[in-house]
Image (tube, rainbow over all chains, first blue to last red; front, side, top):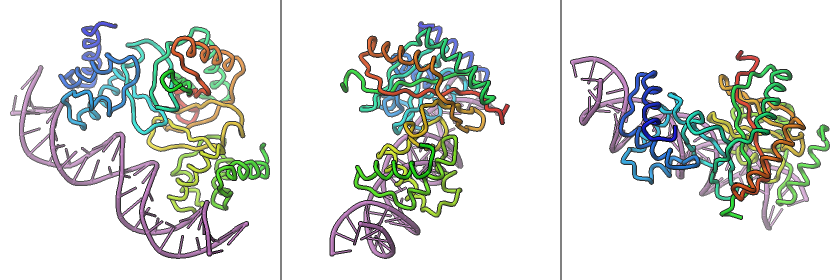
Length: 146
Length: 146
DNA sequence: CTCAGTGCAAAGGATTTGCATGCCG
DNA sequence: CGGCATGCAAATCCTTTGCACTGAG
């Protein structure tokens, strides 16, 4: 799935299910996200000179998220971040720097995932909650801010 | 720490460090949060007829957070949620319903915490990231929405 | 008195939407 | 042609701030 062609094809298929097209603007957005190994903020996308209007960036990211091609990542700071959907890039967690706000990816750790499955069962038993996915953020200080 | 008197005393101490007082409005906010076993949204607080102006609610929650008495909880939906600080209520994770947005608490599980410590070491080794805390959300469907 | 705290109204800022136009199928 | 997609600008909506007033110490 690392190859650009595969990404485009997958995105196109998923968009088509919603009767939407893989337009050039959407391709550009996917390329910006694919070029980053961490979630990207919307200001960063706008600054990367995609040629897209601000409203188009917002609108297209919503569409791409609905299509399951990208994930929206929410942290405590003021803007939303986006990255390619986890099923395209592999399951991972996030390292959130409490100083500068940057978010890095951390590939999942097998032992941790096993423990998380236990927690999912626990939630089911104790709260009747059917967990379908999880989100783990480690908050601390990144190497740049240390 | 379950008793209201203790909560007030602790809150007052922590506020005093910032040269702030435990005013009646702040007491009301703490009571609203203490009465809930899950994070509460600001609209919910406003609807609970605290008698506080909207701006005071926002302002006081910021102060209480700075004092370390409450935690701000961010999810994917549009508003912020608050709950008593973890050191007052015990470490826990969140169950976020993807249908209705409600957030429930789930007390931490020992085996999971152990695995998380491993992940923290992993982040340190691989990314030079010094994690100080973590945030785990299980996303799924709550018992009401099922 | 002094200064934190409060209410009200206005401002701020990220995100969303209305509308007319452009473009792919 | 028909409908999705886009740009621009205006509107939204949660949240923050300015300002004058109140109140505790």
